[in-house]
Every structure is written in C-alpha cells, then in structure tokens.
Length: 188
Image 1 (cartoon, rainbow, N blue to C red):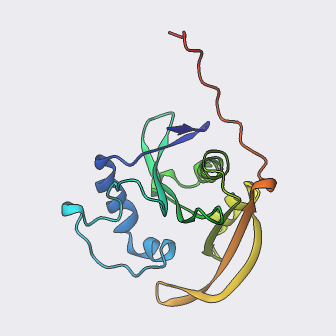
Image 2 (tube, rainbow, N blue to C red):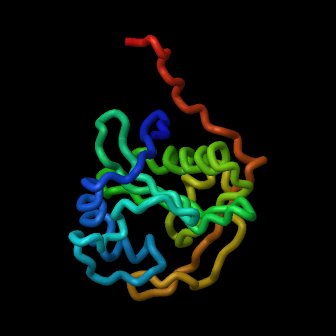
C-alpha cells in the first residue's frame, strides 16, 4: 500500500466492487461526466462490473483509495493508457460522494504521481477532464500539473457537448511528495 497523510492506494479487493459500482458507476449523471465511454446498465455479479479486480496489466494500474483515519473505502484511482516505451500514462480518479470536498482528491493525485514517477519511472503523466470540473483541475494544478490545452466540445455528458482540458506533468517538474515515514522495524 502507498500511504499519504490522509489516504492510501491499495490493490482492489473483491468487497470494494459493490460499493464502487453502486456509488460511482450507477450514479449515471456523475459517471457520464467521469468516463468517456457510454453508460449502460451492468450487473455487479458475475464479473461484469468495471471495478472488478483484474490481474496485472501492462496498460493500467488500478487502485482503491482508502481513508487512513477510518480505513473506509474513499474511491478509485488509476494510471491507464500506460505506454512503457515512451514512459507515459494517463491519470484518473473518482471519489465516493461522501469523500469529496475534503482534500482527498489532491492527495490521491499526489500519490498517483509518486507511483508514476518514483515507482514506475515515467517521464510524463497526463489527465483529461471536463473544463467545468473545478475540483479536478484545482487538484491537478496544486500537484504541479500545467494546463496544456482545451479540446473544444469534445466531451458528451448528460446530453450536452462540453469542452475538455488536458493537463500534463513532466518528471523533472515533479516536486515530489513527502510520504509519512515508516515506523522503525522494532516499534511495537
């Protein structure tokens, strides 16, 4: 698990699936804003949920976001579209409604950057979001991302076309993130 001060990133557990599916996938208006793929009804059972734990993949790294103070599942985070040749990946996250607006998104972005730059050795991380998603844009900019462009009316969400923005961060621009230090090995 990769721990920050407020949240940690861990592997997806089977018992995360129903919660993430109900609060993130089945919230159709929010899902339509967070995912460029069209929503269609999917059952949680039978391995149909997009939140099902998957085996290792060269193209993505999926995490569950856990609030450290409570151990509560806060959402999902991932690096996707991983290009190992060009050392590049896209970043994404979605927090449960009760976990939004408390600074957990910023720390999740910082932890994904730590994983991408420090653990995986990527050169560039990028994220795309709707231009009116002030929370995601604010978290990305606070983490050091630069607004690189606007894709005019390229996102279809809830019956309307919306501009999308692209933000990028290069490894040499990454200021790093001070993770909590591990307790001494003999701490009891």
